[in-house]
Image (cartoon, rainbow, N blue to C red; front, side):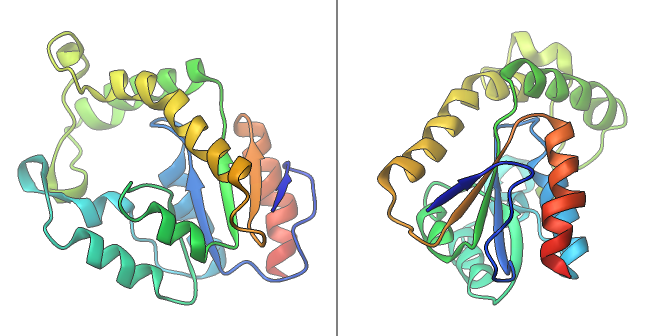
Length: 193
């Protein structure tokens, strides 16, 4: 296993399968979508496999994710406790968005105010995140989840690194949006040529 930063060269092989790890507000979906665009692949948001209307769970989500992962090339968010290990086994690169906690929580608040609550934008399953004022009444409000899961996601990635069960896996650790942009326009772009 190799752990690299935003300016380090990727292995000589072409990246075909990549997942993006990080807590809510880190930019996982945005980066996965960008990677798909640059790789010439259709983007499928992980949550679309999982969420059905009314915040219920789709019965076939695990089978659907595994079918997606059987493809030769993809980029997706590193989510889903029940399928994460199978996903990791197939990865060439795990991009770890290890942003500061304050940054991810602030982004989640802004997203909730502007994109989700302000316009009522629908997300997977036709669901809408609760407005910011429900922060005080909703135990699982997205802002609370962003705070709560920040160290959990970090621990999950550290476990993959520490266990070293995937010798060919490359982990790209990025801290802050400037490092994400540098990696996309530098190392990642060079890998596509």
